Length: 169
Image (cartoon, rainbow, N blue to C red; front, side, top):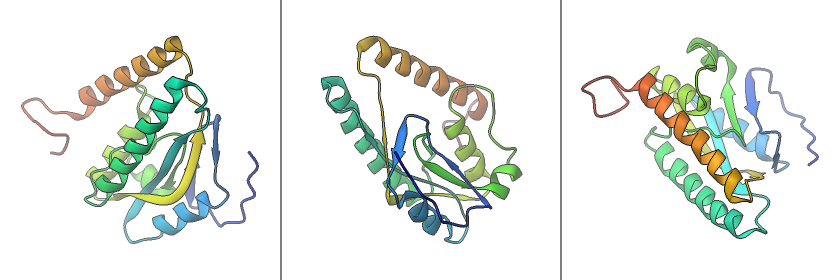
């Protein structure tokens, strides 16, 4: 991947996984979305780059579905995931909520929950696209899903209150 960036991003933090490639206009699209009033974080569409294996084609469909859900949930400020392949944050807002946590495996979910709880919006830039590599064998797939499950348990333990049915207070 090659990307030339000529944007003023000094007050923004962009996250792109090392095994992901982003479209050349992805950061600009995200910056434009984050410029809206009270938007503190934005994510984009995640596609699977290595779709040549059967399991990866299914993961690709799952990723497109997840992107659609993030788009819909962002409309009601209920999107609680800014995935690693492509996300952007307002620097002062993530510092305000204590920055990224090193506890657990789902720091993307943790930071978005804390931003929403502090009154910030998490949005979606549908023209910002990242393509990422996914596990192409069963062993790698189960390792990834085990990490996801451990992250979910960690998030539930940290953000769910006893006798509460939802994440919000």
